[in-house]
Length: 150
Image 1 (cartoon, one colour):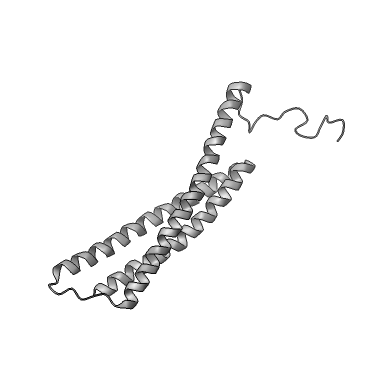
Image 2 (spheres, rainbow, N blue to C red):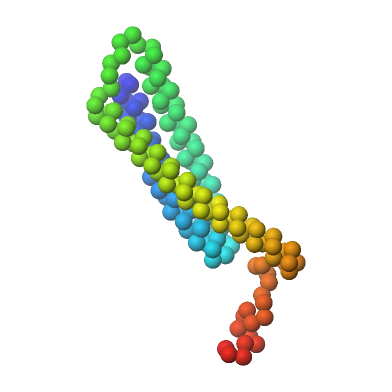
């Protein structure tokens, strides 16, 4: 029984690691979209990221439930039978991989957050200086017309 709960928690952790990898790749794409100013891509990637994060939060609750059930089952029995070596090894590998994935994602998230903050500051500066949004402003020669060298 307790091995089954540990296997379940390990399986959920492995799924979480997989989704952290996908979310990390999505954040890298979001950072590129922020740099290039691709408004439609930014919006769709943000929504997709929110959906993925919601699913990951739900999975985290299921991991906690499995671990709580394991702790309760261990507390209810007088004899503490050890976990099988296979269950212990799988859980340790899954939890270590989850910790590494979460740390890697934090670095990517920090870069995307910094780009977002910098973009917001740039937009605010443009509004203060020019009085208009940078996405609607086209400086002289921006479209190619009127350029003497074009």
